[in-house]
Amino acid sequence: MGTILVTGAKGQLGSDLVAALCQHYGAASVLESGRAALHRAYHCDAVPQRDYRFYEVLDVMDRQRLQDLIEKYQIDAIYHLAGVLSAKGEQQPDRCWNVNVNGLYNVLETARIYHLKLFFPSSIAVFGPHTPKLDTPQITIEDPSTMYGITKVTGELLCHYYAHRYGVDVRSLRLPGIISYSIPPGGGTTDFAVEIFYAALKDRHYTCFVRPETRLPMMYMPDAVRAVLELMQADEAAIKIRSSYNITAVSFSAAELVSEIQRYLPDFVCDYAPDFRQAIADSWVSEVDDSKARADWGWRPEYDLPAIVEDMLKQLSRRLDIPLKNRNR
Ligand code: AKB
Image (cartoon, rainbow, N blue to C red; front, side, top):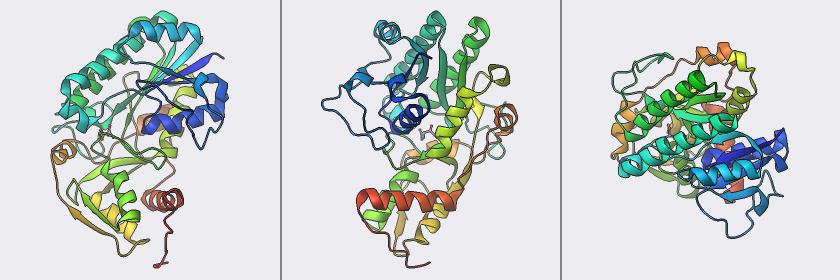
């Protein structure tokens, strides 16, 4: 096996996915990349031995540099995670288009030329106000109202095109909001579902930027990482959808998340001050039908809301060194 290249490796999904890829394929088989230079050897809990040799500066807009790295490290698969998320994308639509569409185009062209396997994360942001909100089908109306969603619809179409026109083995998931404790997310609309845990532990107070009844599809990071690995390991013949698979684990409202956290931290208080991200959340769906992913490559989520909250609070209280007084149980 050759080497795996991960773009956007220092982001929320990248950090945990790299650790899992290192565990599965060996740390020497995984090359991380990102726009920023690393100024000192960094520490990663899951992969403590990582050093500079496994990180390269790469802006996905630079196709020549991308292809130089493919040749230098004999890359045979790319996990292309570099991207601008929904809220940041509304503030910088031009950058969002450039990174998410032109960057993906560079990666797809490179995958075509060098015969690389490719993972592309799409998002529930492909859906829009006219998409059915419940049991959202695999094939349905995609009328996103954000630049991020528009770039993800475009990305899905490009992936489908490259798979069918050129035979590129590209695989993709429409990821929901991802909840994790290693690296906080940045620039997304679902970020409240992670920020709330830090605030609950540190301050016992959080001001949520979406209304309490806002209900979105979510997934715990261990499920998300396993989904990516299982999708990429599945037989090529099993992968029937080359745009992107609907995938989900759990759906909950902001208020339901607050109540679950209050079972562990009864003095936690959440108030609500919806901002521009409310409109983004309102344009998305609440519950996705992921039966195609289940049927084609055996997708099954493991974490429901109580399991997510229990593990998040346990892990974060350890990391932040804030004891979790379990007064209610
Ligand atoms: C975001 O909120 O932008 C992302 C997503 C759902 O794609 N987490």
